[in-house]
Length: 88
Image 1 (tube, rainbow, N blue to C red):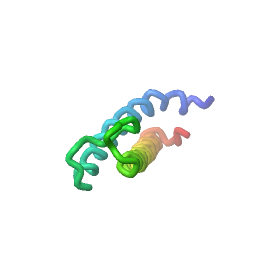
Image 2 (cartoon, rainbow, N blue to C red; image 1 turned 135 degrees about the vertical axis):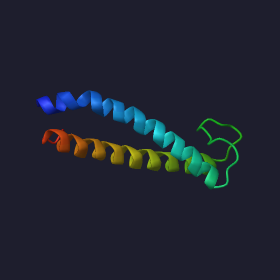
Image 3 (cartoon, one colour; image 1 turned 180 degrees about the vertical axis):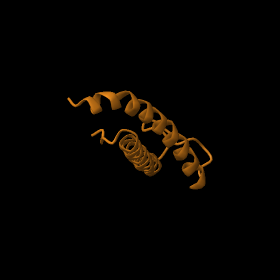
């Protein structure tokens, strides 16, 4: 494994944790904007309909993937600017 990959691992882990928190907060806001007063449903919420559960899951997944990609890409670009080496 390249030294740049090893050196980037802790940075990537920290960025991953931050992106997860940011994605969670963004999803909560998006859920409220869509007009839902309650928290997003879990798959096992008995009182929620299939449509609502699946909509929440798809929206949450899309937001998480988008935020993660943006943060990962930004971290890689910043690493290249600082070190001259692409971490991937």
